[in-house]
Length: 354
Length: 106
Image (cartoon, rainbow over all chains, first blue to last red):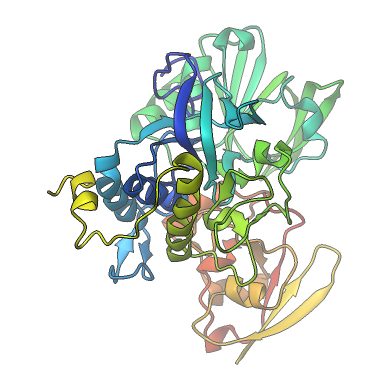
């Protein structure tokens, strides 16, 4: 594992600004199908997602769970739906920028949009399609009182530079691969390391568990079975953490904490883009699925309108209508001829079946 | 119909009735019981429908499956009586069930 957040750094960016017709934010089912609908209308798309894989919630939350309400697919798992959509959009060759999130959005003098990711990649695009579902997946924050004050100073949800943890007394909390991997990686670097987990059973890879246990046996680190219940310190600097075990509560000295409790969805930077919002959803019209800002569209679970249903099939419909409106912006001089994929030679050529 | 009582941290009790076959999470969401969030909609994928089963009901309700036990790692203040309410299927034998809603979900 490299010395970066495993959620990030998945593809190579050249750093040069990328110009495109459409930038799709979110690689869930609606974002993926938007590539298809836009592609049929000769609109080229790039797709950004904070996860290191495509599929959104379908891939992250329920890859193995069956979905029963996709038209013509009586039963399909989240992963299978994702795989099928990837196959369907292949002819349009979208470029994916995974493991990163759009931080800022502004309008250029020529009317196009400039968007920048948290890794510094810049996009210049004619339209923006927000297909961000429930928001971006971000690490869960343990509901410990006052934890916000410590975040970024002595409580971290990712390790950017291991050497920042040298000479620290580190508490890692969790029982999955992130907790175990960082335990094994940081143990040689830090002053002391304790792994805290609520039970003596780990979800992580068995060989990582074995390695951790042998480090514990040799006295190189501690394993504690229990849960953190309170943080103590001042000015963002941790001093002690209260740990609840089956024998009661005790305070122990730590200077750094790394909690690994999985991911949750937050609206994130979208909230700061000047769009009208309604309880963390983006209101759109039902003709074009355009937001309060012309040229910025929102489809799928993230949007709201009278009668909205958060169903994948509704998002597919929204992608089709949105694409018609985007065509008027991207190709203003071209007349849009309504065609069927069943019979249109030109559509079939685009799909590579003719 | 089966009666289920949700008890909040401050002692507030809310009794709901639900059809056997539903989950305790679905019963809570139908009646807008505060503190049961169920972010993932019942896929056993988020641990935000965490409840504590009252001692006298623990045997009837039973313990978590291995998948649920793994997901409980993502809940806060997990105890022996912790369950994810989306994984408790309501049946006639759970008529009168009492569960506590934790002070915080993640």
